[in-house]
Amino acid sequence: MSQTEKSIASRLLSLTALLAAGVLLSACSLWSSSDSNTLSSADEAQLRPVRESFMAGQYEAVIAQVDNTPALTSGSVGLHTSALKYKAFSECLTEAKRSCASTFERILTLNPSFTLLPAEKSHPSWGPVFERVQAQHQPASAGSTAGGSGTAGGGSITPIRPLTR
Image 1 (cartoon, rainbow, N blue to C red):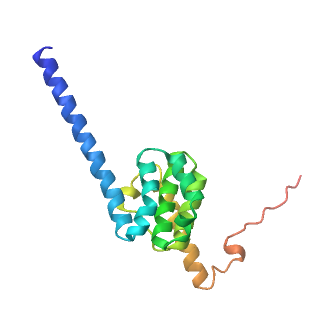
Image 2: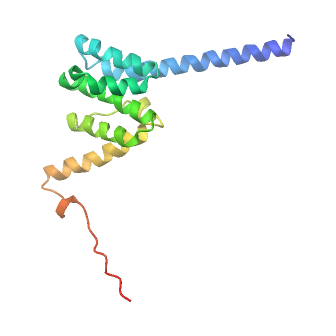
């Protein structure tokens, strides 16, 4: 191997290691501050298999685990919202955008002040879905506490004139 080839290989290896470190640090910031601060050690133990499946890229398994583990949805609000967050992320990553949006709606119904971390909000798969659901959820909450929006059904209907010939 020539000196130039060795230099290119060394740079490529360094770049790969740098990228891998960045991904690991990003993943650590995603999960540590949003889940562990609000969960008891018992909640953490119940959520661990879901988190491990998610980190392993087993998104269908995450969805099934959350749907089929009653303890995840009957426990504390923190446990419930954390489990649903992994489910929503998994749904978005498997292109089930409607299910993802529905799961984010369930989270915001349980905890209207729920928000994603900045690193989570910027994710291209679930960030825009969450932002849209959160924006839709806020006016609905404010309108219901302020006596409604003044329109029947909360929306605006524009009549269409019949076609005449």
